[in-house]
Image (cartoon, rainbow, N blue to C red; front, side, top):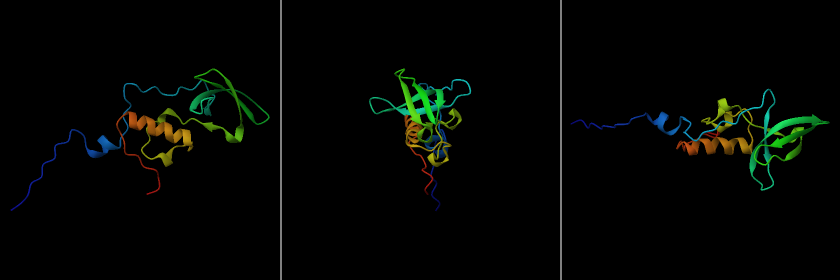
Length: 123
């Protein structure tokens, strides 16, 4: 006697649980021309986006998008924002700019789209 198991899914498991689909609230982090965009830690201790203003003697001058304040960061400590092409990446280890704010941003995008499973590149 054979058992028949029927599974009726509207999407396959990969598409449902791993593939990122931006939701209606998604707003990509836009770039200002050819200049890169950076992560900064604002006065409240949160990661926010800042635009490149200038550079002098290895120090970047950035302007916070949320607060409009000017930030000065050593060039070697700067954490660039990834391209919007990488938004919602399945494996965080594949992010071009692998940093704490980039990983947190990627996880936030995935969780807000109800895609809760994410690889970390370790296994």
